[in-house]
Length: 297
Image 1 (spheres, helix red, strand yellow):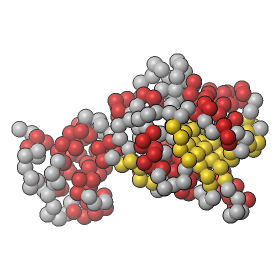
Image 2 (tube, rainbow, N blue to C red; image 1 turned 30 degrees about the vertical axis):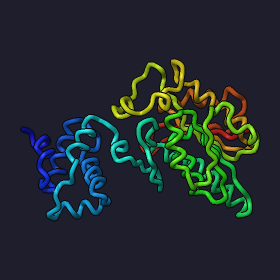
Image 3 (cartoon, rainbow, N blue to C red; image 1 turned 60 degrees about the vertical axis):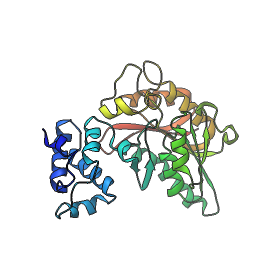
Image 4 (cartoon, rainbow, N blue to C red; image 1 turned 30 degrees about the horizontal axis):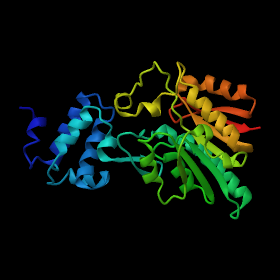
């Protein structure tokens, strides 16, 4: 009997041994960050921080009940965030699970572009002015919550079409002041036409025939949040671009995330509409071209 299976029935396995064995199991399963995930799973079950867990590994603590089971789930490539129920995005702790796209670190750099513009506008207009921002296809609510909580006097609006994702956004945006609607970005917020300062979007953009490289994404993220429509994946990005052009005031800022191989397509899309100037491609922290922005003419 393997040590992994044996751990299911023994309750006094030293914590350090259990985490070491879990790391080995996750490594064998091809999990990208096996040591980190093994520690986070243990910390989750013990109700402690990862820092507190590190101290416990040098003591006499034993593995928590159910640890082998959650390690087995992670080894099957179920997302860590689905197991713990939590995803971290910038300073936020978001509730996530089946049916909602797990926010990724690269999106943090995309929303930063929007926050930078909003921050400059706040400084220019003063504390008495209210800024307006929109998140198209909010998913978990990550982008909208970041803008609402990091920029003073910013009224944020968000829209989500998926019936599965909308409840997660509702939960995560509660208390933030974000106006959330369940609907299609194509006709959302017509009452704001021509008045919005910043629009940020991380729309579905994967081409219909493509398979995501990350196993967790391919197996567990909802297809509605991944595939942009059409052979090139550009149908939803085109819709987001059209809605942004409708909502933004002249001089308003739009930024949209995309795959690194779509940078030229996105720049051509914005250029071709005639609605945008100062079109710019932005790289993420790994140097990949992951977002395109424009200023509304």
